[in-house]
Length: 200
Ligand code: ADP
Ligand code: MG
Ligand code: MG
Image (cartoon, rainbow, N blue to C red):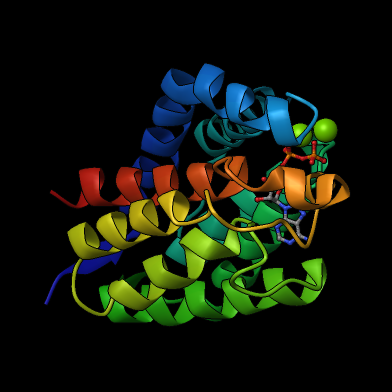
């Protein structure tokens, strides 16, 4: 079975920063009709800070990489997505502990704990038209493969279009939030796409 070391996790965060950079305009466009048009910029700023921090001081374990990344997102992103993604990664990092290498299934278990923490912090659940609509199916499909996780997360993001938002800024629009793809679910799918890319 594949073992994932700290360098793999740094590559994941670096690939995530790159894909977010490429897709930043699209994320901000999605955040225009149902938000405040800053999601791309928020994610760009956050992940650029993550990469800078990881390069300056490369952590020795997978858990430490995710914990450092989460901490950086919380401190550098003002919007709702900063604390939520920060909590996802910090909680997952904590779950991975101090092992120098982890398996894909340990990563899945860790991310699952992270997703639970996001739901708790956000008071949100799948179906609320949030990042959870991509994170939950993505983490579940990690039981199969990295590619399956990327596909499931992307499908989850697309499936937010007909939903009415129950949490976050989009919920202020009520029924008018229907018909738009959730920006946070879209960026979550990008995180899984980056994971699948570095696992190849
Ligand atoms: P803000 O809304 O503060 O400007 P962003 O635009 O960066 O922050 O992020 C918005 C995204 O955050 C939404 O598209 C949604 O996916 C996610 N989000 C917002 N509130 C919650 C919540 N309570 N639970 C889970 N995700 C949320
Ligand atoms: Mg926003
Ligand atoms: Mg904002």
